[in-house]
Image (cartoon, rainbow, N blue to C red; front, side):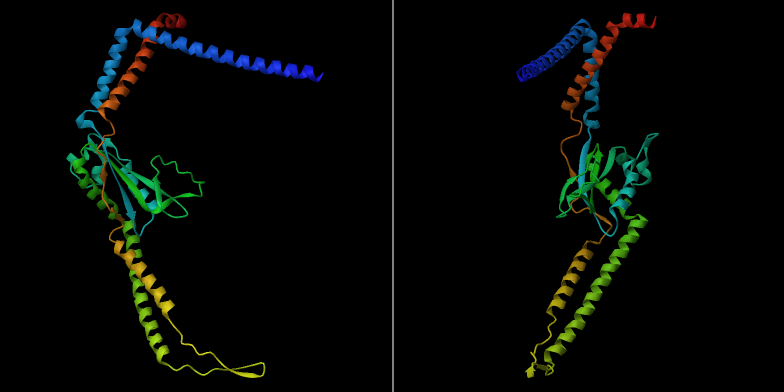
Length: 321
């Protein structure tokens, strides 16, 4: 009985494998046959196919012409005295600009001439991600797909990535100055920046006063005779240990706090600061070779759809009749 069940299971498994291969063979044959049918249609309507492909190729070349090429410039913006979420909200006014009636909405926000505004394709802002354990930047969230449940990677609160898309890279310094002026003139960001700057100044002054006070106490303690201390323990009279009170640990802590505050204050020149300016990529985002290949492929797909429609036009008419 066991042998019969085993043979039956083996036969069923072999049949299942055979059915799977038959299914694969059938589908692969159908796909190859359909591709051959498309090739025959392309040859049958060769004039239509070539015409659409040439039209699509010309469109690709036109979109990648030298005057229409788009270049990217990117930098890291450091944030001082304000919140990264507030900066992102303010930046949305630049990120979501529109072009209406030949006039860019950026004209109301950036103090730039029309000759510069017409070359701006887009201005984008992205979060910078880092590992929580060390706080070192690891990547930029270009697609804004940062997993909120991730406990290892977090958004950095002191920096953002800014990208400019433009037709003319020579105008990047003008756009950079206008962006900084727009961001640093925001009322809310400016007020938060001034509050934090005042706090740092007060912290430095407190450290200076405390440093003088502790230094004076140290001088008095160093030159003052220690009081004799007596202690009775186990019916014995003991002379207590004589030590001078030292203040070097307090002085070092104050010095570290003061140095950190002074270092932070040296960076508080504006709410948004670009340490290195924009770095321009020499390669355009729409090169002619890439757009030419895409144009040919897109044109061939469109020509296939058209010739399929033409070849089955009679069947379509009969269907509607």
